[in-house]
Image (cartoon, rainbow, N blue to C red; front, side, top):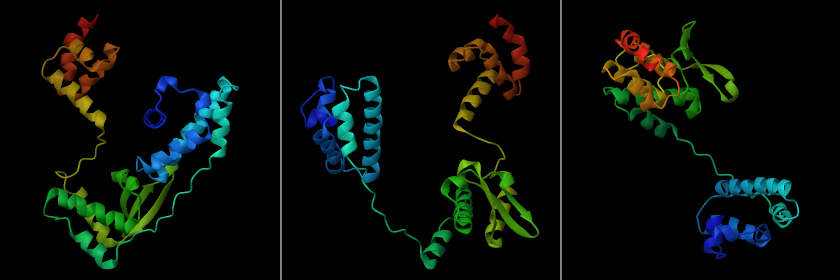
Length: 239
């Protein structure tokens, strides 16, 4: 909005008043978002929602000053998004796609399993990403998946045997798969553990990581092979 005000209305951000946010200005801004910025309706509508929320907030703070702004927002309708046709692969296209990864390579084998699981289960991308080892199992000679949905709901489905065999083979090769929960924060834990193993004083690690308490840093001692002994030897220095 400030960029629009500067480029089109020739006003600095600090010069814009509530009375300037009339229907013409708001409508012009939303059209500018679509035409000049090349944004879709799905981008335009959240901008409008933000303006609506701010108008309600402004009226609660100063009803008289924000009246023009609030009334202008009420006159602008939410724009309907065009319904795009859903795209699908033909049988031949799906067959080609599933054969693209090279199963002889580590990443190719992984990609082959992911594509097959997505096709056999019809699961959402995030549902596939959230799968855990315990979610894949065999019962009564059938390969099954427990899929966690939005809202932490779950559903259990049967997948075709050829698809079920692939993740089973993958799990049987420990050099390809580790049953651990790795997150971006894992790298932080690793850094702390390796610093301990290198003999870096625990107070230095505390300051490096930005911990407010030495007890928080001390927990990393258990993550390294020499951490427990090292912690006992030097943690007293914190006092």
